[in-house]
Length: 119
Length: 119
DNA sequence: TCAGATAGAGATAAATTTATCCCTATTGAA
DNA sequence: TTCAATAGGGATAAATTTATCTCTATCTGA
Image (cartoon, rainbow over all chains, first blue to last red):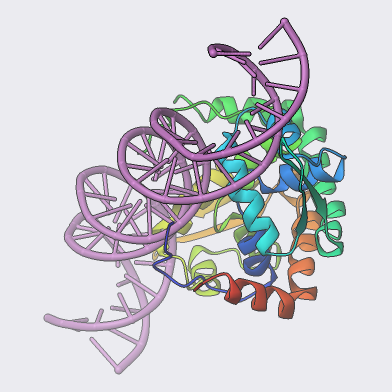
């Protein structure tokens, strides 16, 4: 596993939230769990761009930060379900607002992103 | 300069906003500019954890994504001021909400982050 | 019996992001 | 006249994050 070499600054709310939410797939994971896709395999299908491995790792971090909980059913084949904790649930309005802004400005953003790729 | 090797997924609002806001200092830069710290040197003092260079680079990206604008005064020593465009301004409520969540949960977050450092 | 679904993790490679170091220029103050 | 402040950028190194590949295990259905 990777060992951090530098201490992060934790000066303000943005630093603090960044430590738990700054990860390529974390907001999507929280959002999809909130939408009812709670099993790892469902989440993997919802986020095809991410490998199985990475989602597992990020789910584990979300869990250790108490944003999601996990239920392991003692059955075979294995069954696992994630759920939002109250703490994680409290982020949903914010993630919703972020995604909504992106949706609202979709066209403009696509153009800007395209423009900033090649030149 | 760094050349991207893979195309990002742009499937939903979260992907889109990520392309312009996903950078260690970007939200802070927007926030401080919004607070009235508009000159590069002021921003550098507000964000001591970041090097001069990195802030310049991230400001440039924010500019190319039309979230901030830049006024160069033709004086010596040089004077530059950044300002939020309407587009950038529209992100302020969201950044505010994000930071507020972090502030509200400061204590809990500090404990969680600390717990997840060493073990 | 073999393929595919389920869930998870170690080792390692690749990509990306951030940081560091060293340049350019000019003015005013000590 | 030397230092600090102003703003910016290239080259490169380091840190971090993400992806890939390879394992383990068990059950169901063809």
